[in-house]
Length: 297
Image (cartoon, rainbow, N blue to C red; front, side):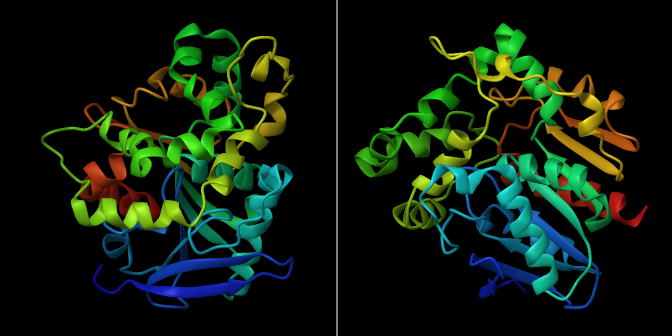
């Protein structure tokens, strides 16, 4: 983690405290790196040094994760609350806008941020995180994506914290190892120990992202995303957007990319055929090279 410093905190005016790691030069263009579940800022530890030249790279622990504030109520994890955190973090860092590079739940929030406040998001890089319109459609109508996303309903359940913590977080470890690529080992014993430390600080915040979202597959008598009526015109992305996608992701299927040209004004898509959902760890150098090209364009 050469040149990356942790232990920074931003006290936001609405009472949330965000921990963040940072690298590069303060005052250079701001690049926010937004992680997903079940990770923390360390999802970006390989990429941050590769992106720091010419940028001030900041990777926060999102609300609910690791050293940041962890409110317990589900409503505190609706997208607008997390978007508010990001806008306030940019201001607390002394900036008016940022480029956002985001994965998984970080990407879900970044899509909403770019849609709602395009003046604050110079450019968007979404990495294996679907735009809400194709994801809602697929969850409502596509049996393959419904099956791939069935785990979401398991994570929404009240007992999820207890079950995930059993046997030293064995189920969370399988989140990573279930799509492991033998030629791209990344979950070292040292890194796994660090993840267990992070998970021990609390799982409810991370799980509440699933509980607060209306995007989940039908389950029993709950119609999930099929109950939604979304107007694509209200979800148009007007900032330059790069989508990087590991096509071996078994949770988020490549078909989610197909509708994107209808929804994004300025779109670039790059596919990584052998990469899984954990491509930040598997392919940091190619991903960093793509991001650098996109930000410099």
